[in-house]
Length: 102
Image (cartoon, rainbow, N blue to C red):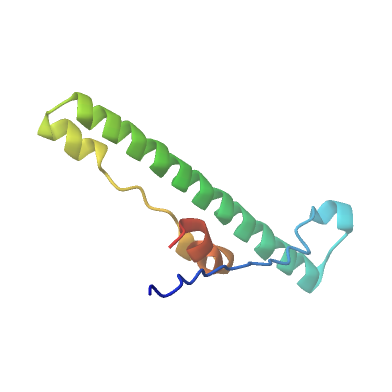
């Protein structure tokens, strides 16, 4: 009899308090610093998502291009890896596993 397959689920809860515009909240001192760090992390998350989207579209174009062409130079240019900047912030390092399904 086969053993039941185990399913693993992960829930990420991220507190983004302080990500508002500083001019609107009149934040200063430590609160302003924290808001700036949160905004930097959100910007890096945006860069990661953009790089992942570009990587995905690049891979799909490369596979369709390589199937229509047998040239080795076009295949090597199409398989150039794009770097996703997960290491640029704590937020993206923590979410890397969830974002990459791996």
